[in-house]
Amino acid sequence: MGDVRRCRAMKIVTWNVNSVRARQERLLNWLKTRQPDVLCLQELKCVEKDFPLEAVREAGYHAALYGQKTYNGVAILAKAEPKDVVQGIPDGVEDPQSRVIAATVNGVRVMSVYAPNGQAVDSPAYEYKLEWYSRLRRYLDTKHKPDEPMVLCGDWNVAPENIDVWDPRLWEGQTLFTLKERDALQRLCAFGLADTFRKLHPDVQKFSWWDYRMLGFPKNQGLRIDHILATAPVVERLAQADVDREERKGKQPSDHAPYWIEIKD
Image 1 (cartoon, one colour):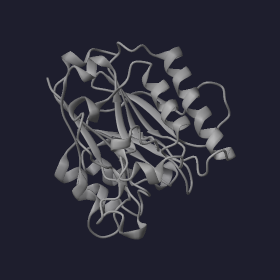
Image 2 (cartoon, rainbow, N blue to C red; image 1 turned 180 degrees about the vertical axis):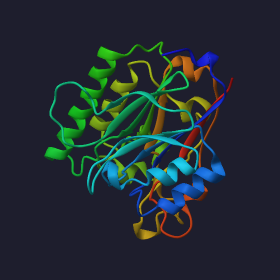
Image 3 (cartoon, one colour; image 1 turned 60 degrees about the vertical axis):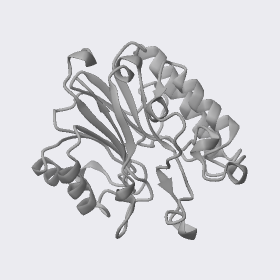
Image 4 (spheres, helix red, strand yellow; image 1 turned 30 degrees about the vertical axis):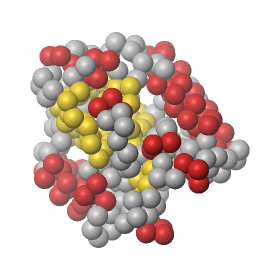
């Protein structure tokens, strides 16, 4: 898969776009102004044939897609052509939900991930979420090594720590912030993955998601649930990491803001 040390600087972004067709103009404008090397998208909410592929190509990007009608859907957009594309978690489990796509870009293995929401604690959807996390960890153990240059980018639907929640007392025990969910994310990271934001900003409170309701964004009542998890060869070259909060503003934004990192030469 190559060595990240041989790669030029890369800007890698994750963004739950919350319907690519509803926010196509936003997406294309953002690509034009921000010019990331890699953009991982979640919640496409469309099948491959309905994705604006030609417009994305005209913007200078290749696309690897794993779509689904109405729900879910993930993609990797990159200036360099994504190689060795894998859709889903290929572990033999029948799962109709399109939540993971992986590809190699400039020597880095990139995954775009949309973790299950979980809906309500102890519901079937919640149990599916916990098992899905276990499946992903088993897949990493089987197919990858922690010394490979790799990033897992996505909406993980888990706020890892109190600092990642605007009111941890209010959220304690609620979906996205239960102990079981946080433990599931920690077990995944124990493979050899680091939270890139916390590596550079150990004490900074920034959020990546704000509820559309109750003026969540103007009040900054948010959660940090969008993460780029990286192996040591990437973390060693980590130069910057931040949330593009401006993209949460304006007309019909996604409820998520893009989160980005830069890897230096």
